[in-house]
Each structure stands twice: as structure tokens, then as C-alpha cells.
Amino acid sequence: MTKRIMVVAFAVLVALTGCESLKRLGLSIERPTARVVGVDLNRLDFSEAELGARIAVDNPNPVGVAVAGFSYSFFVEGVEFLSGDQERGLTIDPFEEREIAFPVTVGFGNVVDTVIAVGEQDEADYVLSVDVRLDVPVLGRVTIPLRREGTFPIVRPPSVTVNDLVLESLGISGARLELTVEVENPNGFALTLESLSYSFAVQERIWVDGTTDRSRTIPANGTGEVGADFTLRFAEFGRTVRDLLLGDDPISYTFVAEARIDPDLDPLRTVVLPFTRSGVVDLRRR
Image (tube, rainbow, N blue to C red; front, side, top):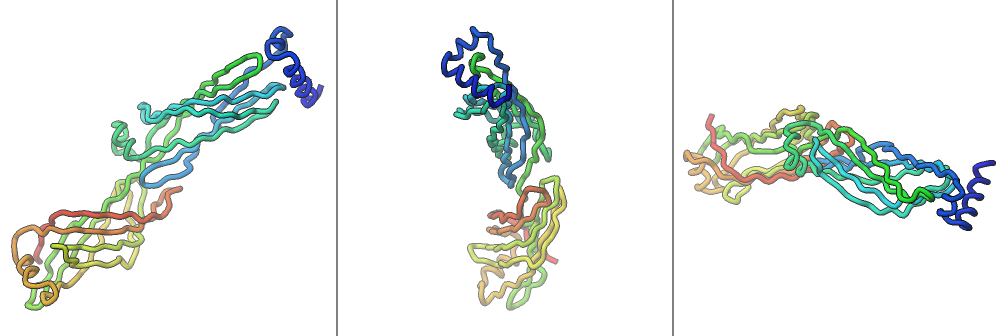
């Protein structure tokens, strides 16, 4: 008997007699099987990772099987991080296998705050636990437990801070200064700083602004510097700035920047990250 004839015959039999009659007739219905096909890294940025879980359910019977739904738990370094339950009105045809896909989104900030074991790691271990619920003729409700282990990368955004402010020269008409900005990469992969647009303001007056003219590679777990030379003319900024440069007090500032970053890690893409920093910096004199 071909599979097609078997399917038609079982379908007619179920329609006429129902599942209870199939049991009394002693007709064999096999338990379906399921497996985790894969957990793919669908999307990755500096705030979160989206994993795509794919489950395959195989129906070895000549009658259809309904996927009632599934529940899942996602563990990071042994700590339950996410859980959920989804209802699915799917039917798996006789002698067919069908894939079910669903996303799991992991926010890096939440992982670092919640899972102490992550620490400074560049990747984290995960366990995905899934219970697939099937409605199978004759057998009734069948639950198939599945488990998949793996790792996913932990990505942390770089930081941009004011590192140094140097008074190179001071004259009657103005002063020449150098500003140094430090870019820190806390990740286990290199970053290319393609450009940095910035403004450095003191007492709500912008002392210097601009955009870097060349790219720089920030090594893994390392730092890089961006420097800017500029001139303050006292005719424009007034005597207050001259007195500030001659004094011994730290200089309060506001630093605003946009960094165009190209990470050396797939599937991370080039991104523009904003930064705003307020603080104080000691003025060094050459």
C-alpha cells in the first residue's frame, strides 16, 4: 500500500470512527519526534543579540498531527534569563517534517546586571530548554522535551572620554591648546573608528569642534587617542577665558560626540554611537 493510499484510508477511518475507535481496532500510531535544528545569531548590535531557534517536528504517521504550542526557558551561565509560552495552530501533514522558528532576544545590559558569572567575558554559555506540545490521534497530548547548549558573544559599547587638555602657549591675543580624547574598546575584537565628530564646551561656550580626518584602529580590549589642536582668541572669548587658563582650578566642560564605529565581528555592522560627557579636567602646561 502506497503512502498516499494509506493517508486517504486513515483519514476516512478517522472521520468515520474517531480516535477511540482507532484505539479499539489496534491501529498503530507512532509517537512523533522533534529536534533542535539550530540556534542562529540573526542580529547583533551593541545593545542586544537576537537568536533564532529552529525546531523540526517529524510526523511518521498517516494522519496529521497538530502542534498545540511550546514553552521555552533560556538560561545564561546557569541562570534562567528568559521564558515564554507560545500557542501554535499548526498541522503537520502525514509523513512530513515541519520547522518551527522563534526568536530569543538577549539584552547585554540585562545579562551583565543579572548574571554575575558573565563578568568581563567576551562570550556567554547558554542553554535553551523547549517543551513542544503535540495533539496526536490515538495518543492524545504528547509533550517532547528538547535541549540545546551553545555560546553567544557579549558585546559592550566603546566609551569616549576627555583624557587631557594642554596649554601649549599663551600670548596677549590668545592661547594655543591641545585636547586629547580617549576611545576605549572593552571587547575581545578590534574596532575601527572611522570618524569622530565632537564639540568641547566650557561655560556654555564651544572652545573647539570638528571631525577627525582619518580612521583609527582600536585594538581588542585596548584604547586609542584622538587629538585636536585649537586656538582661543581673547577678542572673541573675553578676559574670563584668559583668567581661567592662568588659574589653578580644574576646568569644567561638556563634551558631545558622535563616533562612527566599524566592529571587526560578524554580523555587527557599522554604527554611529552618540556620547555626552560632563566633568572636570586639569589644565596641563608645557
